Each structure stands twice: as C-alpha cells, then as structure tokens.
Image 1 (cartoon, rainbow, N blue to C red):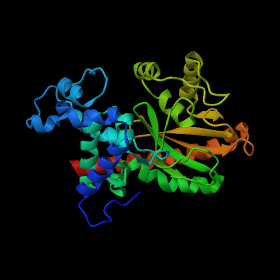
Image 2 (spheres, rainbow, N blue to C red):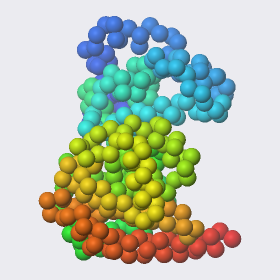
Image 3 (cartoon, rainbow, N blue to C red):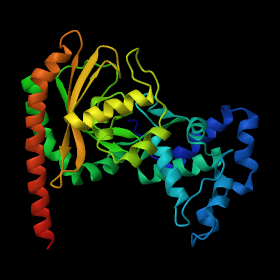
Image 4 (cartoon, one colour):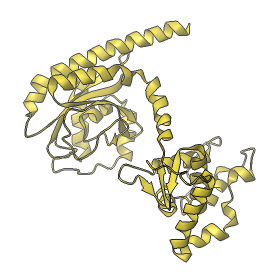
Length: 330
C-alpha cells in the first residue's frame, strides 16, 4: 500500500496531479472524451433526488455496454464505486486512471470522479500516476468477518487441525459464483496461488467448492452452471457438465469431496461441510497437501476423520452461538 499525502498538500491536489499526469501521457484520442464530453457530468449532481433513470446514468458513464435490467431503486453509482475498488488485485495492486477505466468499463471522466471520491474517503491513495488501495479498505471486509461467527469459531479449530496434520487448512463460503476464503491456517505454502482470507476461487475444481455446490437446491445449481465457464485449469480438471453433476451428486450422498490436482498440478485436497443449527450447509472446511507427499487414500483414511471431527465441533459451537443470540434478541 502506498501513502498518498507525503507532500503536505490535500488529497484532492495529489489525486488531481496524478490524473493530470496520466492524461498528459495518454493518446490525444483517449484523453479527448474526458475534456469535451459534458454528458459525463455526475448523475448524482444533476439529479440530487436520485430520480434520474438508471439507463440515462449508464449512457453517461459506461462505454459501449448495453443497459442491464435493474430494479428502479438500484443505486448505480454505488455499484460502480465498488467496481473501482474490486478492479485492484494482488496481481495489479497499482493502476493508472486509464487502467481503472479499462478494467471497470467506465469512461475516464467517471473513473476519475470515483477515484477522487475514494481518495477523499481514505480508501484509495496515489503516487504519481499510480493509484492503489489504502489499508482503510480492509474495514469493509472486516465488518463482514467480525459479524460472521463461522470464521471466528473455525479459526482455532483450523490452527489445531493444521498443526495435527502438518498441512494447510481453510474455511470458505459460497459468494455469488465464487468461493471466498474466510479463515485459514497455513502450514507450508504448496500452491503458486497465494491463498489468504478473502481469496476467491471458482468452485467447480475445488474440494470446498464442490461441497458447497452439492448443497445447493437443484434450480440454484442449474443457474450457477449456466453462468459458469468450465475451463481446464490442469490436465485433470473436470470440464464436462454431466460428469461434474455426477460428482456433485456423489459428494451430496457421501458428505465430503476430494479433488486430485484439478485446481493446480501437484495439489490435492479434501473437504467437508459446516452446518448451522438447522442443518443447512453454510461453509466448508478443507485440508490440502502436496501430491508427492500425500496419496488420495491418505486423505480419505487419515485426513477425513479429523476434518469431520473439526466440522462437528464447529457445528456445535455455531449452534450454541446462534441459540445464545436468539435468546438475547427476545
């Protein structure tokens, strides 16, 4: 993370300088719209009551995209502000104004407004032409994690499990079309992907993802698979939908999932569900190991019983916490 305000000037000055420098180095054709397009005025300023139609707002700020069907009370500006935050990643922690506009589909003028607003609020910083997220953005995710008791309950169990198995263990939940890691205890780093709390992965080639997909109602699973492109990430990745459905049916019946090098070559994992007091699957817990060190039968014979035990303890603590919360709410 880079600190912005090292010159003693206000954040608005720093952001304006970096954006101006970015515009100065860009192609004239690229910079022209940001200077001459009066249509890119902030819809919130033109319509403070929030009554301007969503379609008109999209025409002003989004380049070449058809207007999606949205609820009339959908706040498009909030959606775009969050898109600006999400466009930064571990691979691209710093971006120029042009890159932010390209990655979000916003015009440069709209991207500039969102960046300056986020900078004013302390979520974004800039150094020269480069923008990056500030530590304050962590507060957005912490609010969820601090209220999501599964992560809090699971963490000590993960640490015990990782120490016992000498392998990394994680808990994830299904969020949209991804699984998101909400708790993790690392032993040795065995993957080229840096897995931390907040990491998002596709569900279909992962053990936790398959546990979570197998718990979905049939219509939700159908909708998920319609939206998902099954890509071959390794030579072992299952990309045939019929075969994947058969695997998920087996996972649902046996209560666990094991994956052999489908997300990344050399990595095997096994996962079981975490359930709330009603029996609903709310998360999944897994252990992963290097294929050269741990055989698949070892995952099933040695890792699975320990995972099931940890999941049962988490289930029980989660049910207790929910019961206490329900009594307190009366």
